[in-house]
Length: 309
Length: 202
Image (cartoon, rainbow over all chains, first blue to last red; front, side):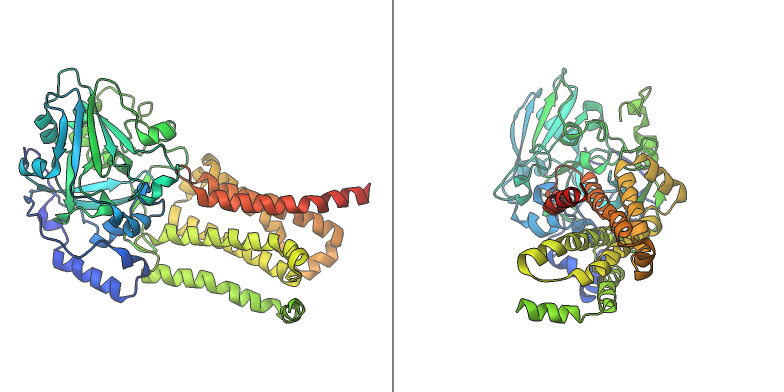
C-alpha cells in the first residue's frame, strides 16, 4: 500500500527536470565523450505519487545515475551498462514468484503495475566500493508484491534472481561471478516499508543500465543487495545463496548493511564520496545503515553486526 | 628499412621522449577537469595513470625481444621509458593520496591493512632507487655491473605492479590477468639470458 512510509525527504529537494535536462545539454555541449551512449530520449512521465520526504539530500543528476553503473551482466567497466544494456529486452517482462507462497506463478509486469501505486522515493545509495549517490526512485513497496502472492507462514527469507540472457548480456560470457546474479533478504527486511521494487527514476521508466524494468532497492544496505532486472522471487525457509557472498563470504556478508565500523577487507568503509563532485570532490563520513538507522536498527536488535556483516 | 628506422631512432634525444611522455597525464588531467572522464573522474584518473604505467613497463620489457626478433633498436630510449614509467606510477600514487583517500590516517591504515595497497607500495619503493640512479653519473659511480644488478629490481617491481592490479578486481576480471600474463611471459623470455650469465660466471 502506497503512502505507508513517512519521512522528511521532500519533492522540493529533487533537481527540477528542466535543470537536469539543462545540465545534460551543457555536458553534451562540453563534448563529454563518455556520455554518448546514455539511454534514450526523455520518455513519458510515470506520474508517480509525490511523497513528502527528504530535506537535506540533493539527488544526483540523471547523467550521474545513468552513466556510472555496476551491472556486470553488461561488463565490468562503469560505462559498460550505459553502452550495452540497450540490448536487453524489457517488454514483455514477468516475475516468477514461487516457493512458500499461496499463489505461485508468473506475474506480468503490466499486471503488477495495475495493482500498485507508484511513489517517488528519494534514497541514498551507498556502493561497497565507497562511492555514493542520491537517487529519486519510482517504485512500490516489495510488501505489496509479496502480499499479492500470499506469503505462507513458514517463509523466512526472500530470494531474488536477475535475468540471465547470454544473447543480450555481453558480460555474462565472462565468469566474473557465478551467474545468474542472486540476492536475498530476511522476510522482515523484505517487508520493511523502506524496501521497494523500483520501476523508474526521475519519474521516467527505469533506464536499462539501472536494472529495467523492475529492480529491488534496499537503501540501508550496500548497493549490490539492490538486485537489478529481477525475473524470480522465491520465498524460502532457509537463507538463500547470494552472488557476492558465494564469491567471497569474508568480503561480502549476507546482510551487507552499510556499516562504517566494519571495514571491507580491501578498503575502509568509514568514508564515501558522492559521485558527480568532479576531480576535487571531498570524502564524507559514511552513516550507520546509510543514514536509515532510526528506521531499521530495531530489525537487528541484539545482533552482532560485525559477525553478521 | 629497419636500419633506417634505427638511424632515426638513434637521433631522437631523450628530452623528446620526456616531453612526449608528459602529454598523456596532461591529457588525462584535462579530461578529468572537463568531464571527459565521466561523473567520477578521481577513480578514472587514478586507473588511467596506473594502467599507463603498466603499458610503459611492458614496453620497457619488450625492448630487448623487439631488437632480437625485429632488429628495431630502442635500447637508447629504454632508460627514458623506465623513468617515464616511474613518473606515471608516482602520479598514480599522488592522485590516490591527495584526491582519492584524502585523510592521512586513512592512507596509513590502507597501506598497512590492505594487501593490494601494500603490494602497490612495495612496487613503488622498489622503483625509487632505480629512478634515483637513472643517470650517467650514477652509472659511472656505481660501475656497470653493480648498476645493472641494482636495476634488476625492475622485474619484481613490475610483477608486483601487475599483481596489485589483479588483486583489486571485484570478481573474476580478465584485463588485469592479461597484463600479468604478458609481463610474466616477457620475463620468461629473459630466462635464457640469465642462465647464460650464470654459466659465464661459473
